[in-house]
Image (tube, rainbow, N blue to C red; front, side):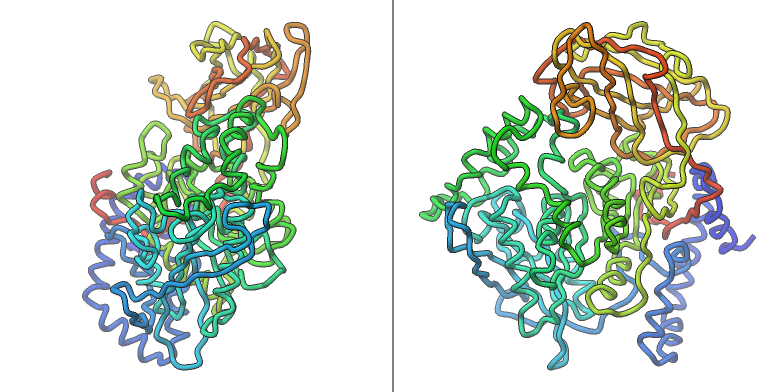
Length: 629
């Protein structure tokens, strides 16, 4: 069997078992292929030169994701590198980083207080040295971390080490400008640190408009970033048709809404009540005479709003959280495209920011692509960070190193070429999803539409091995159920549900559900978890009421997104406690009594792997990856 045959075989095999079995062989093949490319690279590129046409040469490097393993990706470095090398250099400027600094003026509503009405956004720009008259699109990152004491960017004119430098080195030479933007109240931008509120949203929109209107710009702007910087693209996309400069966004573990991040089914994360002032409160405060501009209403009420949300699980008065929810306005107004990237083991920005968000985008007719791997809160192409942040036991470790996507930068180049320059073929509109065991496949939607619901009834299909059906409010005890050993391998993904009948001692209570995969030796790994404040047992944002002790309620819990492969002979284990992970105890603690029977079921969405297209990305040859094997 040839080396190509070995790798090609992996395209039609689904289980991680086959990936693991052949990993050493593929590594050897990859080294051999890499050596050949090193020895013959001069001849290869001479051959491309003989083709004579740059477009034809580039097209030879632009193949579908399942064919990328054949191309000479650099897979031994600390991050991904695009295959195509651009022809342009940076325009030199007066500073050492070849950037220019600008202030963008915009109007703040008077009710915003602080610096209103005179908003001012600080940004820096890097431009390519292109022929006179050539207009270029702009890729920008907007966030609170530029020129703040807590991060390593002494000035916004310095490229961010986490993303900016790589884009300036690899994407800008293809004829793109790059920009970094400080959101309101951070860096040199004035006003208060509005934590994704109206002032910040208006500032992001003003920055996009300014970038699109420059004489050197072709009027096409993209926003990209991770975490907070992955949330600002959603904000800018809300403005939609007011101007058409924003053509695409690439949110990487970003927020579709602030409350949606920190409260799930009414249950609160530990950081949630203090997020505004406690986590970001010092940003923009540097002891100068302009600090008074931080005295705007939302900054002042932020802590109280956070505490009240913990107590009641939702908005009590005003529109603090409504103002900070983006997705509905994006779907209503945005005309561009979305490349959505999410770590399935990211518990900083939970995967429910992306799942089922991706399906809502697709259903709204928005061009959308997803890249969902089993990493934590990081970029998809960083072997050191992904290794450091992945643990065995169902916390990403089983999917390392297959999770590393050294083809991501090439992905970005092809995406931006199409949506910012109208160059090349339209990138695939699909979701690349990785299972917890490391296998990559393609889905048209996620959660997928063509799945079958498999239901496990508590007390029959799953036996109670915990000796109790009572959940104590101090998280010390709760019931545990196990399925029978699986007769065949089980593949499921998306958003499993746990619907369970309960009664409570008082009007309140909380349930935390943990789903595990346990082998014959009782070694268990985390598959996923769910959390619910029982005042929200029907789902949604409306507080429910019932008669404690007497009345039975059905808690309709939904797990955070997961994608799992469970081997035959293993069992599914389901445990209930009053809290878990980084969630707080319920503000309305109560003993909860669980009822087994037909109304208490675990529901998962299973599929046949033989009906899916699996693929292997370029194989990592970094020392961290080799050490794993």
